[in-house]
Image (cartoon, rainbow, N blue to C red):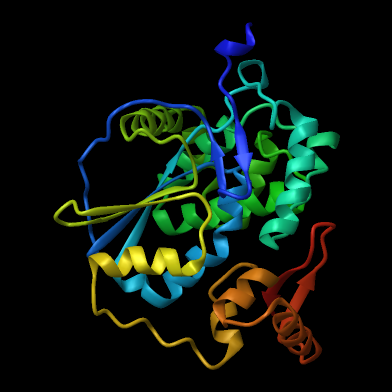
Length: 302
């Protein structure tokens, strides 16, 4: 295959975008349950998407009553035979990119999976997420987080069914139904997501459209500071007051399966050093448990 016919996967940390070339017109159909919908085009192996987990979790904590998130899988990596380019063109280059991304985003990312057990596509975990969605959005969101933790912090090749099934079990899904849907209906649902990517002209991830009931919309492309996401939301629901951050650290931590140091820092407007000291004290008080990974610790309420 000639290089000029390959799609180029280019993950740029300065722009905060994992990019694929696409071209089409935007669809204008928007179904909104709460005042605003966040139409989020993403991919399970997108390092920039993992990098904005702190911002999105904080936005949901402070303004969750005003918006729902609709996840659409983007198909970042179909196969290495169809990708090429000077930046990310194979597993070894992804390993190096993830090492740099971990330092840039201050999020735990272990790129050694690309050297030890490299993924050949992001389609299987994307299809798995569509299977999880058939059992409800809450559990599906938990499942997506879990498979991200697996690939970014545990060096697990999430194209393998054994890991996807384990993630389904970890997040309370009916794993028998999950396997059936993964092999059947979920593939069609994923194809619909890929069509939507083309219809909306999405060129990279993360891409988030903030949409209200009158189809007013604002797009946030790439990894951005928290203020950018907050401003986009408040343009559509002006004057809304954010929920007060609970004074008890454990109150927020209980709402999540795990939390990273960067997420804790963003939640409570702390520096990384301050966040680390607080979490260490909570661990000393036996209120949280730290799980060490090569990429960095994850924390969970006991």
